[in-house]
Image 1 (cartoon, one colour):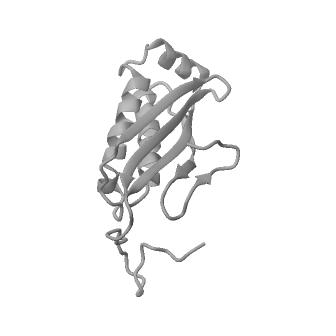
Image 2 (cartoon, one colour):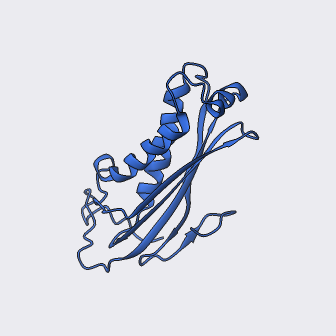
Length: 163
């Protein structure tokens, strides 16, 4: 593990200077789950939630969040993202939704935070849209699944496949 790059020599917060870093293709994939009652999952699947299309709205919220990550996380660079994909897959075994996000950029810094932000906001959107029927939902396991590109190379979480 290397030193923390967001701290300067005195320990103060510092935005990393990426001026001299090469612009390369960088991708990241993150995931998380929203665990809920089986009846709540049925409402979502059948499109019966009072607030509308839960999966479509969560997908859009996640995409929008990825694009605004630099406004939410203080030391993130604004990036011109070339791809953001958010999927919300029903899973009876949870029961709930498995949320994944894949983000891609051609740039000097990675997109892990954008992928993680997309998943987080998509999960929060699901919660918001059906909380009236299931306040006991749990948002769990938000994590980086894989990343490629940049000086640090590739990462694949245990049990996962490449991006």
